[in-house]
Image 1: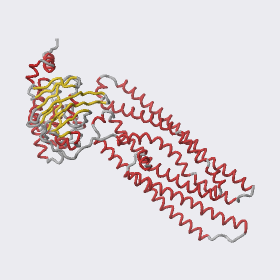
Image 2 (image 1 turned 180 degrees about the vertical axis):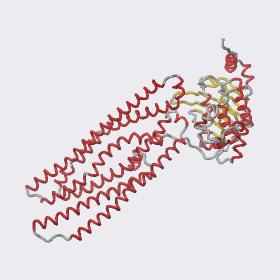
Image 3 (image 1 turned 135 degrees about the vertical axis):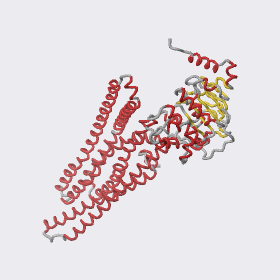
Image 4 (image 1 turned 30 degrees about the horizontal axis):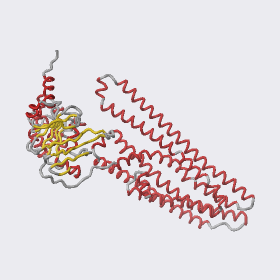
Length: 580
């Protein structure tokens, strides 16, 4: 039970817990070996005191030289082992943690990403893991090792003389009590600092993403002023937080160091009373020089541990978010998509209510309706990018909620209006549609999607890098690459967010030709914004306020004179609009 709490508290993997135990063990050994060095110095001093007081022979130098050599060898070996256990192993822990977070994010439902922005997630994977790496390597092993070794030394000191032991060690628990008492204040300050840092990151990212709009509206000065305010606030919050932490850490260190004074005072009184000799006091003074050393570092480490708790909590929030799971096999009887009384809510706000319709295999089913009616939500639910909160969605008779999303999506191709491309070559961007596809397969899909024409004009053809998100291509060219991906995948289900809505006439014609090749014989679910593009659909589902208002063939819906006809007439009126 303790191990699990410890693991969660510091966001460790199972191997990370073992590494921390190993680091603490070798820290204990190092501290005891160093204390053994103090013992050698005490024995040497005791021998010389005997010579000075009793006039005996000088101690054998060879014996002490042997002890010193043994101490140096043991110290070297144990320090190397401690370094490997605290630093060497931690780098593997950082790697495992980043990969674990990335894997977890890959399996989370899409709705999770609507609650966390890109800067926040990037800060967790990079900044928070970096912060925890320092805790794992510099704090946990050293701190818990210091606890254990000091407890062992304290028992030994109490056996020698309980009065001097108390005088020597009383400041340690008081100093730690002060630090632990300040934990809430330190954690709150760390949380405020983290939020201020995220506001700065968000502001910088937003400025970079929208630099064209900012310049086009002459808002550079105003936007930079706002960003400067965020940076200044982050600086103020950071200074206040570090000042508060520094006060408590230094205050605790001063209290602990007062043990030196109390040891001297108590020891002097006991010597004057004849209850102890000088060598016992000398022994305790030697011990003090080393017993406080691990805690000098530990006091600052504890404060860092409190601050790091914010980072650990943010990492564990990702680990503890439920992932979308399911069966590793998907064997539907056909590919009809059936919505059976489906409901869906964003953060307890229901946006779909009792939605039921069927998109049949080999047909084109169009989802139409006013903005915000739930069209895109239905498409995402159909691919289990989100999970329905009520009802069921079945493909070929199989409830998709029972199938692992990655397995399910092998049967889906998606072509959306907002195309996402990577800063790679044309060839590799198309190959994303089918892992391991040959170059000939990629070129065949590109030709079918009418990509061949513009690719031939690129400097390196299919090996031309296209820039971040296809910055070197036009909108129509980017769209055709997206369709080429879908053609290469050749999945039996196609989800299509009207891909031609923002294209010019020439590009629209070429994209429509490519889409005709893609859609042949598939189960097609189209999110339609232009009514004229769905006139040839086999079935239309009209959504309004998250409900199915009407559904049927286009001609039947036009004859009925309902919402679909009203939308068609409105778009015809807008098409006839001219500048006065």
